[in-house]
Length: 271
Image 1 (cartoon, helix red, strand yellow):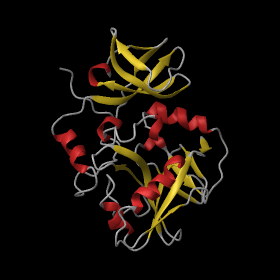
Image 2 (cartoon, rainbow, N blue to C red):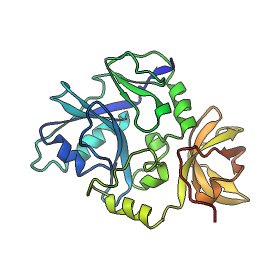
Image 3 (cartoon, rainbow, N blue to C red):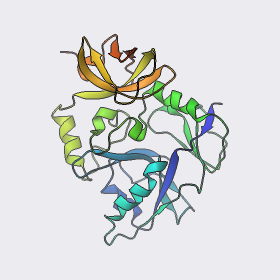
Image 4 (cartoon, helix red, strand yellow):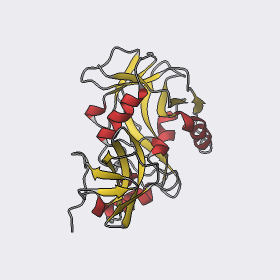
């Protein structure tokens, strides 16, 4: 069973009687009725651009029956600070719980034997997240797995206060609740969808040659059509203009990139 710890992940606890309604008005996905499941959501700037994203789930008995946010470890303190700005009279407590429980990943069909496990809601093939169980394995193995699936990983693939959610697959991967009502940044997200304003997508690519660095320009017939994001061992993600996402080959420095549009990704029909 492929499994690995995820040492670069942290946890933020949102506890208190108003935790659901508090988060509901701030994040991109529905917070109500989490039950024993998990949902992917983003926190946006007031202008509708990505700030961070997380997997959120209920954790009975932890931090006073909290909703936990599984997010990049480096973002935990920032998220506590930003969410605290909106507390006002809400009866919520925000705390950085990074280090309280180890976070891990298991990509298998059956639920893992773990103190606490939740299925990754983005794709069935993404597997499970585990909490409170010390796993053994190489974190690089999970990185290769998520690259093959086309799953973005925080600031390695997205640009804070610049990325639009639909560029990063939040629609197809269930990170947006279109019927939940208002939340911070909703207007731009909705306008991008309903007016067809999307021009770029984050696309998995096979890398032939040396792995390009982040932000290396990607070209097609000599013209820049995107830039490289994260990568490892012949796989990567690149932010590409839509017309380049279906190209058989692209250039990036000394490497050749071959887009691998996954089955879950919806691209507009070519003109």
